[in-house]
Amino acid sequence: MITSLQELPKNSQSKIVIFVPEVEKQMFKPENVAQAIHDFFIYEEELNRRKIRKTFEVGIKSLIIGLSFLALAVFASHSIKLSSTTMMDYFIKEGLTLLGWVSMWKPVNIFLYEWWPMMEVKSINKKIANIEVEFKFY
Image (tube, rainbow, N blue to C red; front, side, top):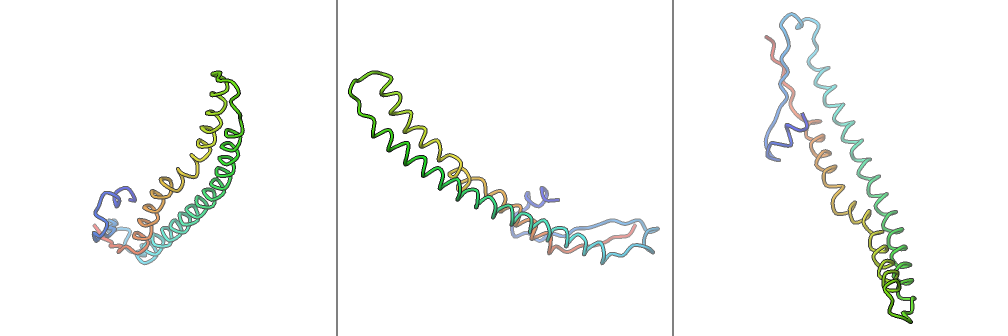
């Protein structure tokens, strides 16, 4: 259902149509089914909201660690005095700088890319939580 709604334009009107055999009509309670669908997607929206919050918490911790390590690596790189111009001296100096920037990958990835898909799923869960549910008996 979520995948189907992702394919539709954001502002399109949607509804869920459930086909129920006529023989089930006597014991079938449409309001219970509709409420169960809405409750489930309210719950899913809340879970997704928590997941987004947790992702940002991890992002902030990763950012603090990454920036700290970057600062140490850049400081260590600049502290190396190149008394000779051997390849190993350049390798260590540039390697420290590169390692410092690589330590920033996780927070950059989180804040630029990871949270967008979760926000889209949260939005769709919210839409389904409020969607019209229609029952057709056949």
